[in-house]
Image (cartoon, rainbow, N blue to C red; front, side):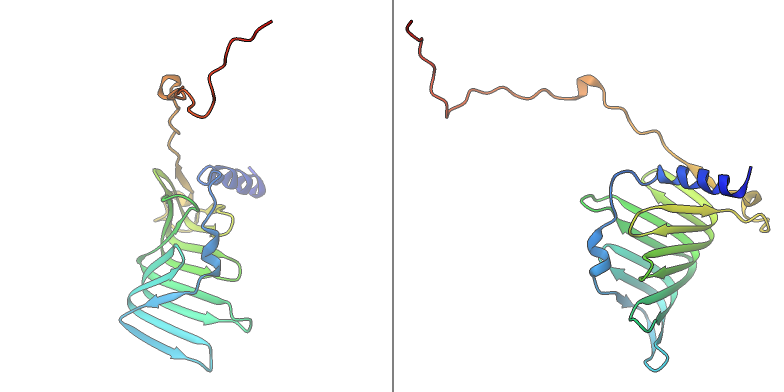
Length: 195
């Protein structure tokens, strides 16, 4: 099977993880808040280092890691690299309490591209659905996942991407409650009409 066909099939499979719900659109307009045990900020080189129980928040996005490096580009966009055993990423879907969760030993979060790249034993979960691979790219704007295996790594289960997609429960016809019929208090009773 050609590489482009494999990529297409993987993207199609991963799109099942992201039904019609959208990522919280307010996230990208929110400031980034960081907490850590130790901080080093170098204003001249536009570099910051956060170490020890690091938490990064931007709206509903939450990244937890042992260490986070932040670089700011000339246009003011931040590029974060989080390291952990594992580091984690989480984002809420707009209008719900449902989250996409991702894990990897390294997570690169780019505020310009609005992507999170998860590396080394990467996995992404939504509900009971889960995808695992050597690298997973997640768009925080479109909620599209792309996963890749790494055949060169023997510890990656033959270098293949693994996914578990749970069947969605069907709604039984009798589970739908009928609309209640109630008399209206605002309509006057009809009187018999005369011919």
